[in-house]
Amino acid sequence: MSGIAPIVGKLRRGLVLDLSVATGLGLGFGCWWWYGYHVPAVRHRDAFYAKVEQARIAARQ
Image (cartoon, rainbow, N blue to C red):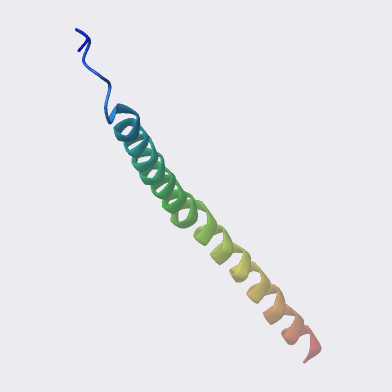
C-alpha cells in the first residue's frame, strides 16, 4: 500500500454539488425573471392592447 490515500468519491461529490448549485441558482433566477419581469411585462402589454381594442370599438359606435 502506498502512503497516499486514494481519492475516492471526490469527483462524484463535486459533480453532485456543482449540479445541485447550478440547478438551484438556475431555478431561482428563472423564477425571478419569470415573475419579476416577464409576467408584469405581459400584463402591461395586455392592458395596452385591451385599451386599444376598447378605443377601436368606441370609435366604431
